[in-house]
Length: 329
Ligand SMILES: [Fe+2]
Image 1 (cartoon, rainbow, N blue to C red):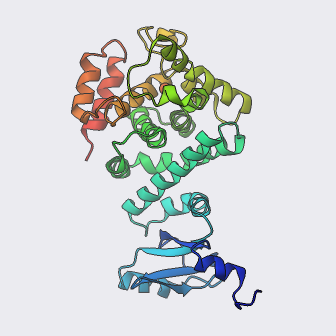
Image 2 (spheres, helix red, strand yellow):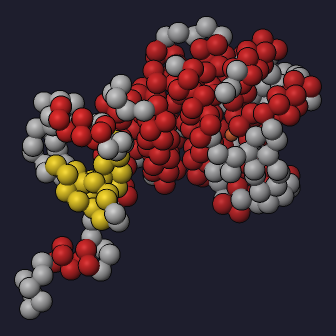
Image 3 (tube, rainbow, N blue to C red):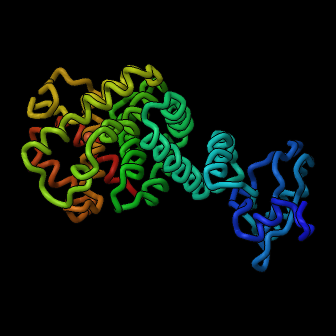
């Protein structure tokens, strides 16, 4: 300890470098459970210790929170990544906990997805990082199966295009469409969710100047860009961490039933799951602001897909997708 009499962590905290407070759902813990973190309340601009670590959570704790209408508590974490990691490891508990409001669950799901996808794009060759997307989708498939949850999630969908928000939004749309056309198997839906989250992972191998170019690509750039499905497939093939269907979705998401897609012009040989993801991908791209194009409304996007892209999507899938979006709250 130095002459100031303060510990290193106190000094770091004073300098704004120490642990920060992050929100968690107040009703995360069940009665009788041992609390694994110090829990704080935010009151009049201050963080006050509400329940210390290792205490048992009691019914009275929950009742007090309800009485004061408190739906968030706070934990201390050294980094925002540590907070995301806490939420991710508690995700299934949060989504299953009936006392946590739908809106709050959806926010946690969205925030967690952004953290996972950002890590995947930063470390695409790390099997552990990619494997996290499988765990995340397993938790989200059941949650998004509920139409009210799906609509709540879609209300959060941002129109500002980023690879991170795009990936999770495509995943939610694709799972909803797959269910709409009768896919019920949990494994099948999970594979579609994972394939959707990872569909553009191959873009990490493409020059950022091409990815971020605010205008039409020239011939060479277009040819390079069109390699991203193959690049993504190769990344996943090396790891063997995701279901084979998800790998195929990554490879085929720009194929079209007409045979006009790429990279292999598969036409009707493309797998159904990739047809589903390609519709979700197109819709989310059209309804997002991109550097070279303004977003369209959901109706305009669907109209464009129905009329101008008529060869590109199978009519029955498109009609089913219109049903999914048409009932959006
Ligand atoms: Fe793509």
